Image 1 (tube, rainbow, N blue to C red):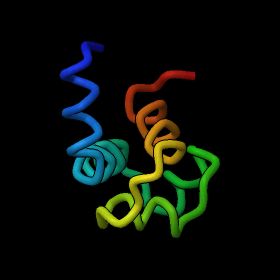
Image 2: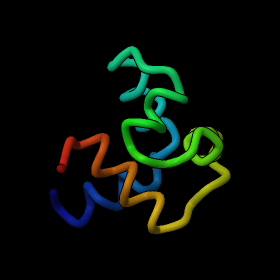
Image 3: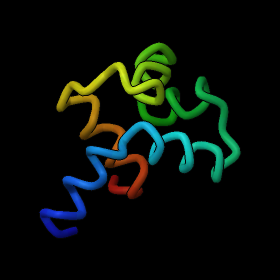
Image 4: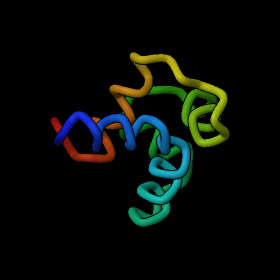
Length: 67
């Protein structure tokens, strides 16, 4: 992933997370469980209200399936 792709992913994190979750046919609760974070955190990210770096890293690892 290039520096520009990473920046784009961070800027678009809410919609990227929502699209990925829906493509995988997961509820917010199921996605949260899969990522090991709370339902409320996933909800805040999707709503664009959580931009903590630690949360963004967890979400990006899940979106891009980095284990």
